[in-house]
Image 1: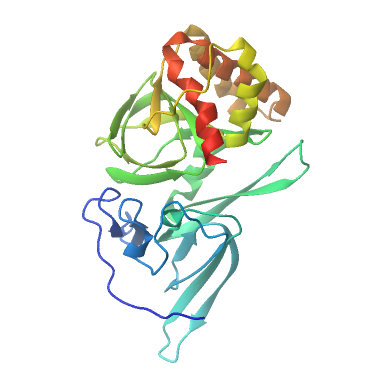
Image 2: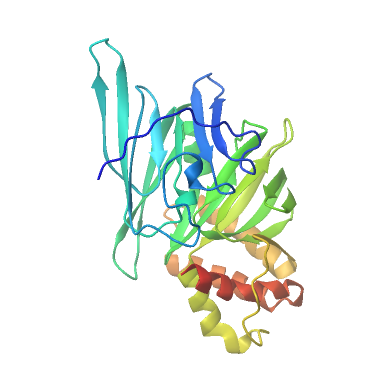
Length: 319
């Protein structure tokens, strides 16, 4: 069955808290558009079974935009091309496929003057090669090559961001849980019902999801981010549970982001990682993972981080 629909989409007045389309321009005055719908639901912009506890098993998304722009969406890009009409105008289309269950409010898109920054990750465990695709504004590509300094090991991804954020407020999303440690500068993270002022020395653990990053004029920001899959969290806490001060799985707090207390041991760890991002050839994956496991263990046994015991419950709920 094929359903055709059309209309004028509502514009977001205060994204992402007030949903709708976001029509913006980048610093070259080119279109830079997106949609926010987590609060109101996906039926804000397309007809669907708008029930948050139900997920389609797969999704196909095709977006058509003026030639010269790219349309980025969920899943894997399976086709793209350009069509020229009799008028001489050209449009580009991009078809994406999501092969796994997904919350419909997480189905989204970004339209802009994007350029692909491609990388790969080879797993020594599964012997699979994972494609890593980052889409950045074309005018920021050279900066992005430097900013996306990464270390990879056993499904984990560590990166150092020296962020060139241009807009005062930037809508961001992470598909993985992460630990972030601020090396310098300042950002303000806005989440539903939460605000976190991220300054030098601040450390947080965050569930996967979206947030708004607000910057102050002329304020830089450099941060270490450690992306951690759900399964890795569950496995780690299960393996070391006898050595951790966790009596039982605590009820996960409502907050998406938890402040973490950093002691001298964990602070030394963060700074000891910095040379690895520049090392050629890169350090052995086994060494990088060992250092990260030491950090995670140190964070979990710190009494000031008692809420971290909820990580296993969070990961279990997400799996």
